[in-house]
Image 1 (cartoon, rainbow, N blue to C red):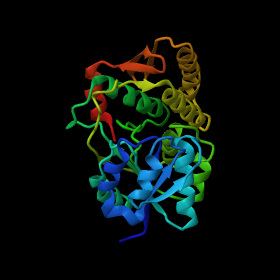
Image 2: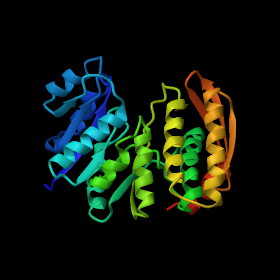
Image 3: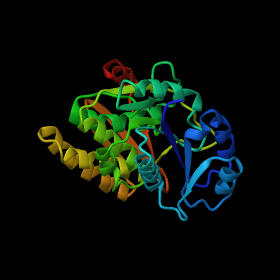
Image 4: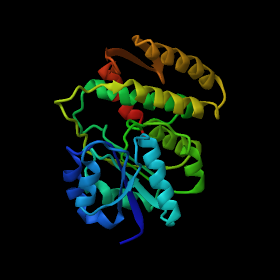
Length: 282
């Protein structure tokens, strides 16, 4: 089997990690779990299952864990990397498709949002909100830039681009790097797995991570779209900081967002815009 690495950051995933690792058995020698200072039994389960692991010692955040995995890949001259979540929302059965696409593309994005999938409208809205910010700057339309299931080729430029990433913002910094290179991006349609015993909202910290990554990317662009986004990003950051509702008109699409708990937002979109977006998407 070819040389590649699967990076799975994990923080307090004792409830899910064992079943995830059972699914990863066919790829065991190519997988490394980065335990981000878990305070539960996550690290003990990783060791019990016999998987390679890196232990951060304390909780530094998902960005630190992914960067550590990328640096591990670079140290061992591994060029192809797949990033997956540890919570069971990414099905290992898609890994061969990612590897096949990585033979043709430098970047491969998992896509949960496509015509065949039945997904709550609020999740469509939050994901298309992220896609719209990038579409405003690039004119390229995607439906799921937020998915953490990603494949990529590791090089010095990528590691430099993400070395200062914070939290979930690293996923968008990878997107920014790919779009900044005007790369052809391969897509793997994947199943959208949600746990409906949990409230499906967007954490404020993920909104801040997205806005930070887009603003950094915006600064590398120029023109009226960049100027408009600068003001919009500032307005949204102010609203989220104050836990206020906000409206944004981006890439000819209206988005509304409402604070529904101490740390999260519920997004809304006109369902007609979803179908319009699907027709335009890459």
